[in-house]
Structure formats: C-alpha cells, structure tokens
Length: 254
Ligand SMILES: [Zn+2]
Image 1 (tube, rainbow, N blue to C red):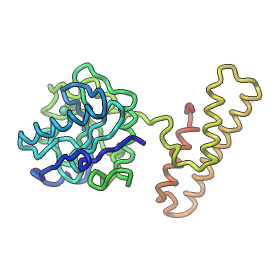
Image 2 (image 1 turned 180 degrees about the vertical axis):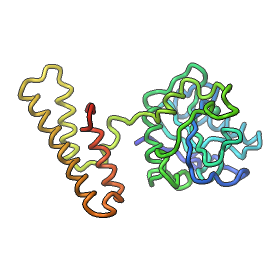
Image 3 (image 1 turned 90 degrees about the horizontal axis):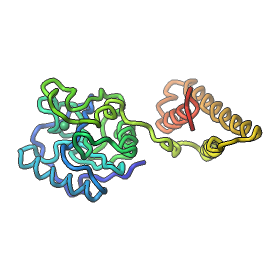
C-alpha cells in the first residue's frame, strides 16, 4: 500500500467555489508542465506552490484531486466532494490526477503501481474521509487531459498518457495483504521456486504443487461466494479472490 498524505496534513485549505463534483464517472490524468519531483518533500513543495498559483487564479486551491509522487506516494489535494479545476468545461464528475513533470517525462514504476492502487482503493477506508471516493474509480472512464474536446492541442499529459489510459499496473506484491497466512506462504514459496535459474525436477514438482493449491483455493472462494446471494458483498473476500485470480490466472507470472 502506498504512503498517503491528506490535504489536512499538507496544510492545504480549499474553498468551495465550483460546487460539488457529482458522482465520479471519469478520471483524467495530467502532468504539471513543470519539474519532476526529486523526493516526496520536493513534490509537496511543488504542490504548495501550485496551490498558491491556482488560488490566485480564482480556483479555490489546487485544481487536482490527487498527486502521485515519483516514489509512489499519494498526496491528497482537493477534497473529492468538490468539483476540480483541471479540465476546462469538463470538471463535473471528473476526478483529476496529476504527476509532476512535462513533455518527455515518463511515469516511474512506483507511479504506475500507485495509480492502479488509487483506482482500485480510492473508495475504501484506506483513504482519509475527505478524499474517499463514493464509488470505485476503477469503474470510471479514463482519459488524459488532451483526450477532451477543446483540449486536443494541449501537450498534457505527454508521455504519461498511455499509463493513464491503461489504468496503471498492479503491483506484484499488491493484494498479498488480503490473503490468509497459509495462502501467503504458498505464494512466497512459489515465488522462491520461480526465481531459481536451474530448478531440479523435484523443485519443478514442488512449484506445481503450490500453484495447484492456490488455484484450488481460488476455486473454493469462488464457490463459497457464489452459493448464496450476497456472497460477493464481502469486500475482503472479493479482494482475496481477485488476488488469487491474478496470481494463478492464465499467463500469470508470480
Ligand atoms: Zn492537464
């Protein structure tokens, strides 16, 4: 799970000048057209200066809802209840995410993973209440700033765009915290065996045993959840199932 810093911790205050965001249905990605952050402290400093600049423009503070630093930290900016100021004429129901950088800069691996994490977790208690989305952002449409009509000639979000459209990537370790202790042990054993360059026949067998155990476990969760109505309502069970599926699914590499 990424480090998360709230606007209150950043001491950023916002004015409600544009009314409510509305139910989130789109996530738009941006770059800042400024320097890349060299550390989280640097990223925070930059966010503070943009906060002042956006305030001066009459936007009531930072126009974006979230910033993801190079290290993968999520800086929560404008509270999610408030309409942003990041894509002129298209800010209703539109969540704004930004990363520091400009033309030619690409997202770091940590940024790709934290973006994925945010899309899948922004609606959970892992986010501070002011920044918790009323709905999963993973189900929202994804755009880059210049995907929008009237903004096509804008350079933003440059080489960050493919990642924004793709939705980032799931971290390989992501989801392990949802598993039970024995499930986790099988996953870690499997990883150790997969890392061996010249596995013996015995190790190869052992690897298969772990894989099959995990696959069976995934099947058990699926059946237990599908047997009764509301069986999928349990968030922990869903997360556990998703994790096991991503670990054992077709083409999955652990
Ligand atoms: Zn932009």
